Length: 453
Ligand SMILES: Cc1cc2nc3c(=O)[nH]c(=O)nc-3n(C[C@H](O)[C@H](O)[C@H](O)COP(=O)(O)OP(=O)(O)OC[C@H]3O[C@@H](n4cnc5c(N)ncnc54)[C@H](O)[C@@H]3O)c2cc1C
Ligand SMILES: NC(=O)c1ccc[n+]([C@@H]2O[C@H](COP(=O)([O-])OP(=O)(O)OC[C@H]3O[C@@H](n4cnc5c(N)ncnc54)[C@H](O)[C@@H]3O)[C@@H](O)[C@H]2O)c1
Image (cartoon, rainbow, N blue to C red; front, side):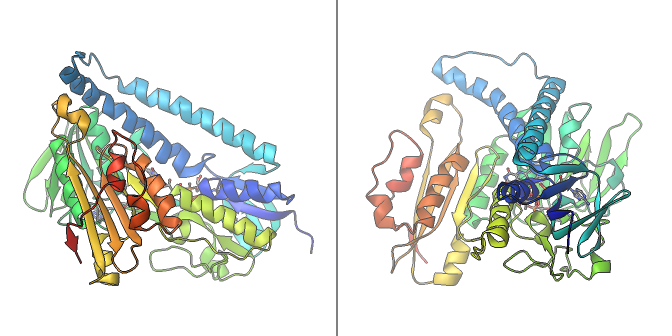
């Protein structure tokens, strides 16, 4: 059977771009269909613009900290339009780089929305394209609950393009996006409320990390309200919003941002008609080779419900190509994926939480902890503290988990993740000479366990 392409990818985000480039590099005839923006969520409305905003949000605090060092500076002005537009220009530059990168790799870019009409055919408007393999890499989309007045709320898709900076913002959710944007808006000077329906933000993270981080975030000025939810949002004549909460409280604000999770983007793909199996939450079911329940159709990235992180989608893209075109059957390894929340200070983690370690290795776990005031803040006057934890299997000395709340934790944790992947034991960390004076050296100097689990 002759097809137009060896591989037709739907979605030019983190996973789709990587898979198409790698397949084209192996001499395959590849096209990628993209409906909105090259680079997908991460480049356009995710990791990249978010991190640029995080940088912006930290200057005011740096200026204050300088005083203790004799460096006196005041913040004259923060211009939201400048931040927003400079960010947008940077994203456009990256879109151009993606365009060149794909074309130079020999990947054909097709602008439009893809819809699968049979196991080897994708329709894009009037065009019908055939391929030996179809790869769905369509990512996710913000989920917002049904709440009266939800139409007045914004999501992470809108927040990067607001006409005006909200001086008062309510952020709903307790996950990555809510916590990161609470830090961004608070740092940029907005009166920020983070509201979460559960007891403690950052579900899934180590419980001490959650408590410590929530405390540090609150110390920075974010008002954290837990155990309640928004009942309704009303728009006032002056354009401001009033949020009514389930606990009877009301808050007036200029913007309400919902960061209540993401759903897989499968709208209009035609999956039901093809009989492609999905879970209840809409994520596509795949095997170790990213194959869906239809033989020639594959899926990877956020749309399959694996950890929704760019490096995971990238790794999957590379595994997919190795499996399909190099004859390498090795599946993607999801163990010890390091991750960071870019709040102030950062949270970063790799491996098991204390709760998971206790559950899996109870009676055989040593906990090493360190909590301290970072050296910088002994003179900056800030009360910020840092927390680090290592979980070690006592009988084997193997590192089970590493956690940090502190400046640059995201940068520090990557090295620990490599060590863990290499099977590092506590003895190896102990025999590693530290870099002084850094916070990171604490990870190689914690000698006495604080607890046994
Ligand atoms: C605010 C925010 C911050 C984030 N920060 C981080 C971070 O700091 N670190 C991190 O690791 N991860 C972060 N993430 C998660 C990360 O962005 C995703 O995990 C990653 O982008 C997933 O890649 P993907 O290839 O699965 O999908 P995506 O990158 O979402 O790409 C999917 C692409 O498919 C296109 N598409 C969808 N349907 C169709 C169709 N029918 N036809 C054609 N094209 C279609 C979309 O337009 C999109 O371009 C963040 C996410 C958000 C929302
Ligand atoms: N730094 C990073 O690596 C980074 C940053 C941002 C996003 N991401 C990825 O993107 C994913 C999506 O981020 P997210 O923050 O939207 O999702 P999330 O799953 O991390 O958090 C969603 C939050 O919304 C709450 N929630 C869900 N439904 C709700 C409802 N009906 N009412 C009130 N609250 C509700 C949940 O309890 C949770 O606290 C993350 O899980 C992560 O994988 C990663």
